[in-house]
Image (cartoon, rainbow over all chains, first blue to last red; front, side, top):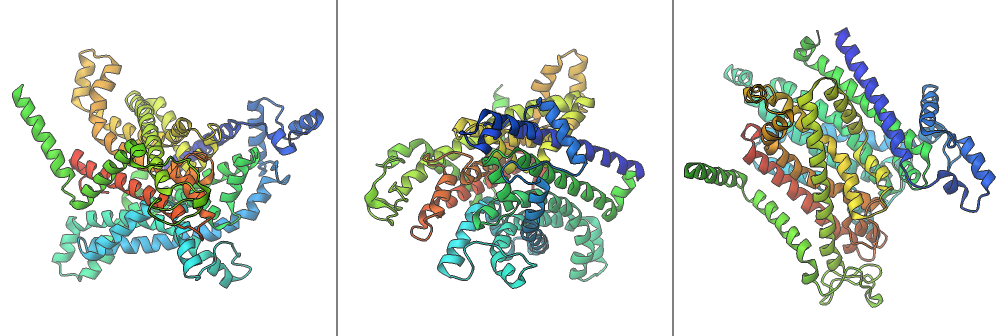
Length: 316
Length: 290
């Protein structure tokens, strides 16, 4: 097991390194001079020079990368050009908001998605199954920004039940947080729910056809116990991977949801940083998000071993 | 020779039978794709207006005789813009998927066949690319191409290349163990011939399925980028642009923002479901799975 762990860890570190190279290259391919963008076209030659020096923009690209990596290893992501404060400070300020929308969405959609998947598989071909399949098809096909706008129109403008946009932190006022957060959270979970429930459904169907389930039924076990005790355990293993992959979707989705509902989270930070050519913020955000995703996948690989003894065996 | 033609014809018949065996849903979705392709091709014939024609008298007008679905904030006909929007969506969707398929398949084929460190290196880079959320990846890249259709297609293509690499790579790794590959190697076939003559055709079924699904993904990405203001730029009538422009006037005229979203949804769902049906028809081993 130790060897397997080390190997997986090594691969993850390698991928993190590659991610850093990609996010750095990506950002340095952005057109436009960040110095001119930050200082305005009226800025004097000296000012521009000084600015370049301050942000190491006068050095060769490879050296800039080395400087950046060295700073990361010291826990520093550099300074934002537009906000003139550390990128880590910007992230620390905005991350809680994104998490307070993304995490409930992830939990909600996983739980509800698994439930829908089971129901769908057990009642295969019945009305409930068709209904769930129909709803998940829409969840996978509808653009999230559009769902957000539709929600604003129906629940905000027509029914006047929910606010049009805005955000309140849960630590500030929990009631208000729920009031403002319910729509973004639900819309973010909709797409995830669809993929989790589809994955659960197909796994359940596969497992239900296996011999040990037939044996359990033949032994006279109650159908409920067969489904929830015997089938579900094995069916849920691949679902863990799906949920892990969803973290990526949550990040992408929160970008849109934040844009629609005007929440100052990581998503809006990235969008404004890209438009303002804020090199440090963009590469910092892309790097942090991607490392987080690599980490989640690493943890999921390990979880697999704990959940499935067959996988644990292959580790040796 | 005629025998061969008969089996071929039977194969085609079988394909269509299974393709449509999922019932009316597949038929409708196939119909939706055909419909939108026709709309994209014949857009100028279908409407008396152009997507850029402004009429300040009709600002945010509701549906009426002259403008069937009303007008937007500067009096452009919504229906016309929707029809022309189909062109943008389908062209970017197809273009990006085609170019990603060509590049991704080639890379996956070579990596899978050559194996060794080349394979590991390419797969790790693919892992790293997949770790970056596609929306963020394409958003950063799309600032380089300033809103033109070809540029956006290339950018979206780059973000879906990894899906082809992974798929083809996995297939080739198992295919190359087959006897016919060893045989081809033994009679002295060139490696390129083995890869593209013998291995590629065996990947074709999965490729077509992945391609169909990716057209949907690409259309979704394009509309998202356009919505965020970094994809196709106004006044070009892309559906994402229309949603983003219409959002500001949601209260006065909701149709402008809501209709393009329905179009995006219909097209994306249609491509997903047709992809599912294709998988059933082309790859019997995968039938019944997701």
